[in-house]
Amino acid sequence: MTPENAEAILRQYFAPWIQRLGLRVEEVGERHAVVRLPWSDDLAREGGGLSGQAMMAAADTATVVAISSARGGFVPMTTVQQSTTFQRPVVGKDVLLDVRITKLGRTLAFTEITLTAEGGDEVVARASTVYALLG
Amino acid sequence: MTPENAEAILRQYFAPWIQRLGLRVEEVGERHAVVRLPWSDDLAREGGGLSGQAMMAAADTATVVAISSARGGFVPMTTVQQSTTFQRPVVGKDVLLDVRITKLGRTLAFTEITLTAEGGDEVVARASTVYALLG
Amino acid sequence: MTPENAEAILRQYFAPWIQRLGLRVEEVGERHAVVRLPWSDDLAREGGGLSGQAMMAAADTATVVAISSARGGFVPMTTVQQSTTFQRPVVGKDVLLDVRITKLGRTLAFTEITLTAEGGDEVVARASTVYALLG
Amino acid sequence: MTPENAEAILRQYFAPWIQRLGLRVEEVGERHAVVRLPWSDDLAREGGGLSGQAMMAAADTATVVAISSARGGFVPMTTVQQSTTFQRPVVGKDVLLDVRITKLGRTLAFTEITLTAEGGDEVVARASTVYALLG
Image (cartoon, rainbow over all chains, first blue to last red; front, side, top):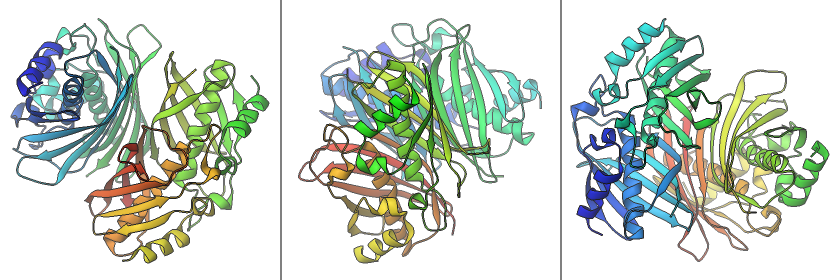
């Protein structure tokens, strides 16, 4: 699977509202993926910071990219649980989401997602997800 | 505070991307709020179900409504943590978010949000949030 | 199923270390259970407050009681995810855990647990769990 | 701070019930710690697997070790939120908890904890915590 295949999955399976995040797939691998959430004023709340809702949505979406890549293509799946912490504000910068699959079972998958702002090492948010694999 | 005041807060403080959820405030109280996420194909993923990302975003947003109502107006605040479980699919129905504040401290607030589809009693998703109050 | 049956499950299936919590089953029903965590200095950290670890462990254990009750007896199951918030200190009081099953599927179950100190209405902690049902 | 100092903190501040986990501090650093949960039948549930409750309790406790190390000594603190996923069973092996502090603020700290069984690379459980720093 290539980043281009993964972006095609984004366009085909996700809601129009999610398409507006403008996510780009930077890297896909056997057990990981890197997804970029480009800065946009459309995603910023009053005060100028990136909304936490956009980060949660991007983390969930990036998980589907990583699992699809690990399985070699899209499979039906659904989020069971997502936990997210918000640690630092982001203003005016793209966010990179590094997704690691820690377990890919027959029916359940677990991932960890680290969000950093472009050009910085510090964690801006962290998420973990549990997914049910349906096919 | 009235539902109209609360909707004004939504319009003033949230990102344009969040405005597109079309959230409506049904009820506000001293320690709770009820918010409606109207059905829209724009929020549905391939297959027709409401995206989990929209439910997470609505739960976070509804929390701000409930805390603002409890404090008698908007105060600067930021999400620290959100945990969400996804329990049943929603197709073609509005979702009602019932937010209960379980603690409103000086610096931290905790809420529980139950999401049901209109006309049904069953839980479609559940969220809990921790917020930092900055003012 | 009776509270006595449920306590027999506690004795049979849980680790000796968990037995030392001294949990008692107050109530079991079709979709809920109430479990008591008796106050003990053994569970208190320096300063005198009940340890959060004891509350997390009791919440997990109480979930097994509720699901067993809902299924009419113990079935093999395993915790997939637990999220817990800690909201108020507890000193010198029993804690009551009210477990509600929000979904009991074929392979996954979801619960919400509210912890209050005896004699008080305020939430001291909240937990949600996702369980995999194996039989 | 040394592992010995950290173990002294464990003995001084934690509940007697937590002491019975027998946690040992392997490593402490500026932003991390490694803690060992030795295998014990006392912590195993029926069937022989390590109880998830012990893993949650160890993760919480290991966080206090890491934050104390980062701050150069124990400071009063309290868990605000803990999310844990359980990914693989552990039978007959010690568990190593690797705690990373992703943010150490003035009033809030965030950590990520990876649990592996001794001699294995695979994640057996993952936890994230939010702590309030009180001093």
